[in-house]
Picture (cartoon, rainbow, N blue to C red):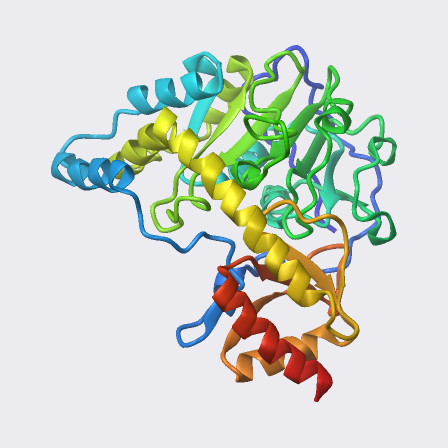
Length: 377
């Protein structure tokens, strides 16, 4: 059992709890490979349905600034312009933005900076890096498991009232469920840091909603809210590593205090600036609409397959399915040239779950044809 570190950095802001020596007794969680991710599945030679990064050519308005930035590598990175652009996109002040080397770095900063946290809670199933970062920093992590019988929907009442750090994804990886913003906002309160991972928020769409449905990115009124964003998914920038946090300036200052110098490269800053502009925002909405159509096509092809059940209402770039013996199906798919994401490394799931990335209809048709042959064989 990992115990919480009492090592300290600067004093916590007033709305956060003071450090404690004895965290509550939390039962040991089953050991899982929290460091396993889809890129391990997607080896060369396989069709990649395991990684949730969009596979499309980079538009010129994004490629050109990144390429131009390569001529300015002799200078140390200056994040001011990118920070201002991201702030403007979300209607915030630059002090409410912290740029990071991908969203994953944000979880490490949270785990390292908030050493006084007494009862951290991670809502699962979700991306495993938040819990992995907390555990690596010495925190004792408590899990709240959402119920597949209820479509993995969030029940705010399941989160302990005295939890002073709560982490949840929206839309959630791997379930693809989009939780109502009101339910997430209900988790915010003085004395608590609420971390909402919106790495896939730009993939979501809702009729009659001009922007990202259920996003809290513009909410600066909720106490202790930290929104984690990624630019690597929609724009295919996983290798560039760029993301950001949105939150109160004093809380971000605390995280920045444990961040390495110049953590975001000059090309990544150029990408952040471009992706925050109006052209990018318009393009994201069209991409989300196209993705919704491709997702519906995948769901339609999965529906008649024997024993395959889609749990929850998918809202993002991936679909979670349940099938008895799914891990054997995954291995059979690999033998036929297809990579999908195993489910047994996500807390709250197991070997009967698989995550499938949404691709174009032709790829989906080819994949589901092979999947049907495996299931019916």
